[in-house]
Length: 147
Image (tube, rainbow, N blue to C red):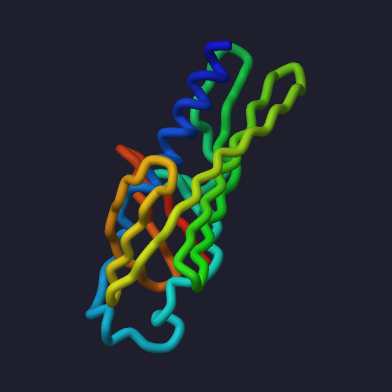
């Protein structure tokens, strides 16, 4: 089924890229962080894709529309991360199909720099955290997660 393969491929690309890409922020010396900024540990919800709030349309083909409807990124105190992205396909005939993409791995932190290592691919990426937000770049896509 070409549409499902296309959507699954795009969702996998978003997920793998996000798991491998920098968490981008803007400020300060990470070693000087205090208060709520002192920990990246927590659960983050997907807020937007490329600046468009979720749900966001990934593709339209014929009578079917595919949307990235939600996502969650969890960073644990033990250094593990789990990311889940949810895609929903809608047909004009009312049929709805949901699929999820899962990525797991390890992260490390040195000051404000965070390095993610994807467990399946081994890909490593470094980045930063600020103001309760993580901005992940997956190829040409930017996924913004908020606590």
